[in-house]
Image (cartoon, rainbow, N blue to C red; front, side, top):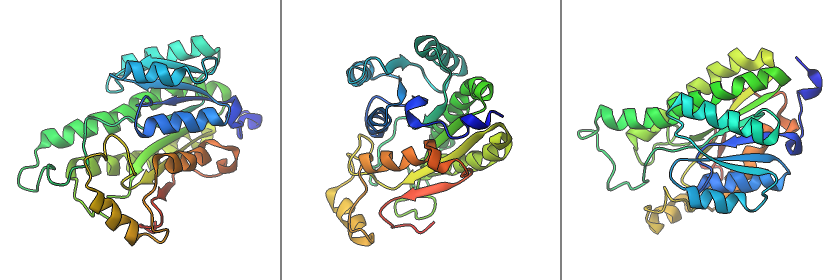
Length: 260
């Protein structure tokens, strides 16, 4: 391994953010751009939003459409990003979320939950993360450095609302985080997870009643609901040189609601 690459500064990194055009993804893009990184804004349907976001720093961003459920499409996007920047992907943030709404009234109940519900979330969350990770691995191995950051949830520790399908997929992603960290650590690649609760507010959480947000805020030591921008700031840690000896971990960013 190239030891000089073990703590690559953020402003020398090329960051692939899946689902980066809107919601939490937009805040992740803005956070990495703020630290001088080059950023690949991956999107599925939100082309206009992705292009508008890329226009904030046109020399350091590229918006690329790819369905993370399809390995070939992801590999093509990673190749296009390398051609554009002249550098391999150093950091992957697995943020893409299949179509989902945090609406407790509309969620599948225990007796209506189908395997198709779970499979849809597994496809987007777990398969998507596997595809992006595998596409970026050759470049990471080439330079002896890599950062994989998976977006999780605190709901499998505190299922205040039992979103069975979403939570099952995120729990599987935590398991993959830990096993990949064991496999890839010797190559200078760390794999970690950042887990929020409900964020105030994203597209996915917009269906959540204000009363629920207020209840969560009252239950946290900080007496507030974490914002997408605050979550994105925490994600920077796992890409930064300050986390160079941290891997296989799950950082819960929810104002102290869940003690991990």
